[in-house]
Amino acid sequence: MKDRNIMPNDRERTVIPGKYIVSTSDRSGRITSVNDAFVEYSGYSREEMLGKQHNLIRHPDMPRAIFWLAWNALEAGEDFYGYVKNLCHDGGFYWVFAHILPEFDAEGDIVGYKSIRREANSRAIAAVVPLYADMLAAEQAAGPKEAIAAGLSVLKQYLSAHRQSYEQMVSSL
Image (tube, rainbow, N blue to C red):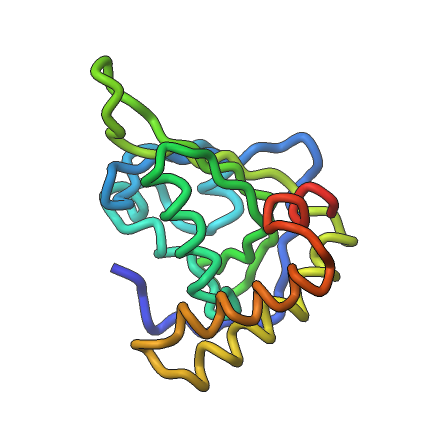
């Protein structure tokens, strides 16, 4: 369960280029393994993370609609790529470029997910921060039941204005 007592602050941790933050989770999103880099950047111990929901590190600046896109892709057996702001145990944060992929058993059924995250370039962060802020504002204004639809609406308007898909936007940054 996410610790609601963590107060986000402005302390940013920059992911070192070439360093990969890796974790696996089961189908419901419970963390099953983490590498040393994940422990280092998140500020949680391995023991504090194992068995917990991956949203343990979800920063409140992240729109729910982005995670909805991720889960839809993964449940369809597809990979997801996106920029994510993660919350550290001490309230700080770090930005990553995330590649999340489903893991399959011998019968081809999804049994879990692997997330490989690396540094996010500053140009990408500068592009997604205002977009995510607009999405989040729409989600908050809409309320819990309509939040995802509101966030997706803002994203679709943005993508339409830029004549690109989400995947094209992410890969262009």
